[in-house]
Every structure is written in C-alpha cells, then in structure tokens.
Figure 1 (spheres, rainbow, N blue to C red):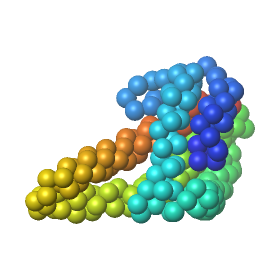
Figure 2 (spheres, helix red, strand yellow; figure 1 turned 180 degrees about the vertical axis):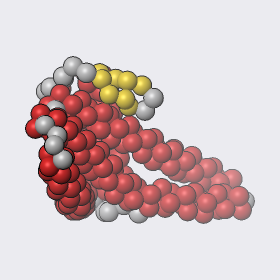
Figure 3 (cartoon, helix red, strand yellow; figure 1 turned 30 degrees about the horizontal axis):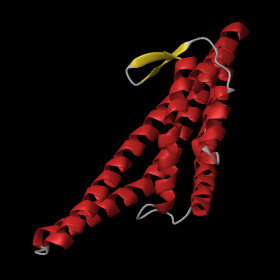
Figure 4 (cartoon, rainbow, N blue to C red; figure 1 turned 45 degrees about the vertical axis):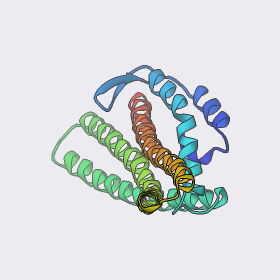
Length: 213
C-alpha cells in the first residue's frame, strides 16, 4: 500500500478498494479503528499524498522531477528493507535460541510453540512498523528541504515587499507573497497527510498480522 509506487491517484484508490477488510481493530492515534475505516481514510488521503509526491519532485529543494522521485523512493525502500530485515533475522535467531533453552528446561512443546508463535508475531509487527516509519522518515528528509526553501524564499520576499515604494510593483509582490504563503502552508498539510497515511498503514497491517498469527 506504499503510495509512492503508484503512478496516479486512481491506481492507488483502486488498489486500496480491492484490499481485504478483515475483522478486528487496531489503534491509530488515539482511536481504535476497524480495517474498513482505515482503508477508507487511506483512499481519502490519496489526493494529498500525490501533492506530497509532486512537491518532492518539483518543490524548491526537491529532487527535480518525478523520475528522480521514483529513483529516490526505490533506493529508500531498498535501504530500509535491508536494514529492518537484518534486525528481524537477528530477532528470530535470538528467539530460536530462547525457545530451545525453554524446552531444555523442561517446558512442553505446546508452550514452546505458543511462545514462539506469539513472539514471531511481535517481531513481524515490529518489522512492519519500523519499515513503514523508516521509509516515511526518508521521504520527510527531502520534504524538510522543500519547506526550508519556502521559508527562506518567504523571508526574502517579505523584505522586498517591505522596502518597495512602487505601489504597482508592491501589489504584485503582495500577490506573489500570498501564493508563497499558500504553498508553504500546503507543505505542512501534505506532511500531516503522509503521517496519517503511514499510521493507518501500520494499523491496517497490524490487523492482518494479528489475523494470521
């Protein structure tokens, strides 16, 4: 359900609509939500997610174009996946040692199986959550450059507006500054949307992992 892998809002929404909607709830923010509600919210966020993608490509301080966004996303996914899978493999190896030790101390195989199943599910949950949030942080790193560029541009434009004596030019600058303020505000909105989308992904995948455990 990674939005950056989709070419259009329509493709992302169609994919979301066809995902399974298992029973169960998980906490997202301060509320317990069902899978269906999470997916509905993800679909509603699609426009903002693609605004985020466009700003990564074309915003000041961004990566330049949509092709570069795809390259950055691919590299970020690969990097995060390798790092988190290495951590997961270490956790599973440690669990195997723990289970073997438990059996050697006389625990029943039934108890060992239950513990292994539960701890494996926890490890999978951690892998999923940290992978999603790690990927988001890499995207936000670029978006932070975009926002910083808007802040610098706004400060410069404010100085020009304040010192310009020509009313005609000043009016044009005021219009440009208003547009700059709107675009800067939009950066905050799309970052918030991406944060929410990732939180919903974590919640939804938690339900899926819980159902399979």
